[in-house]
Image (cartoon, rainbow, N blue to C red; front, side, top):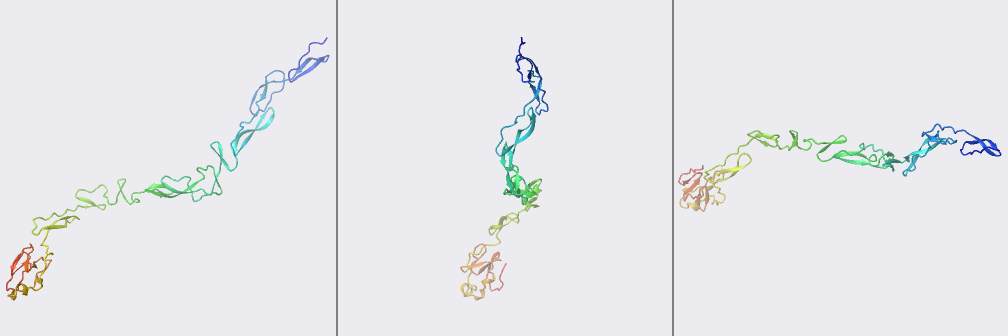
Length: 312
C-alpha cells in the first residue's frame, strides 16, 4: 500500500519519490536573492512558499509625456530582468529652448556688435537690433533684442551707456546752493542798497524827483534810472505859431523904416525867443508884447532907433 501523496504547488517543488506513479515525497530549493538593484529591493516569494527572499524593485519609466518639439532623456536601470534604459526626463530639440514648461523656438539675430546693451537705460532713447542672422538667443523676449543708446530725455545727458541729469549750466541756467536758477537771477538776492541786474548785484539807482512850480508847464523826461519823471519846460512850445515875413519893415512900420528889424535875428527854437504872429511879437507865455515891441527870453523889449537887440 502507497503512502499519501504530496502536492507540487510551489514553483520550485520537485518530486523526489513516487509510488505507483504518485509523488509521495518532494524537495524545494528557494530562489536566490536578486542583487545589483538600481531601485533597491523588496520582499518576494522564494519559490518554496516563503517570502524572505529579496527581489529588485522593477525599473519603470519616470515620465510618460513631454511637450512638443522635445525628446525624452534616458538613464540606465537594473532590476530582476537585467539592465535597461528608462525615460527619466525630456529636453528641447535643436532650435528650441525651454520656457515655462514648453519648448519655444529660438530667436535668430545678428551679432549686433554696435548694439552693446541688453536693455535701454532709464530716460534713454534707443535704437534696437533684431535682424535675422546667426546668433541664437535663449529668450526671445530679452536676449533676442540688443539696444544702442542714441540720446536722452529732456534734462538728461548721455554718459557712456546711461543717462545722467544735466548740470544747471548744461540746461542754460546756473547753480545756486545746489539748485538751478535763471542766469538773470542773483543767487541769494542782493544786499541792502544793491539790486540785481542780469545776474549781478549793482549799486541801486536813485531816481531823480519830479520838478514842481514850473513856469511854462511840465512834461515827461528821464529819471536817470530807466524810468520817467515830470520836468519843467524851459520855454513855451511855439510850434503852432506862424512866422511873419523875414523883413516886416513895410508891413509893421512903413512910416518908420528906422525901426525895421530882421525877425530871423531872434527867431530861434533853441533860445525860445518870441515868434511873430499876426503882426505881433508873441512872448513865451503866449502874450503879445504889443506894437513896437518884441519878446526875447524873459521880457518884452520896445523897438527904438537903437540897433542893439536883446537876444537872451
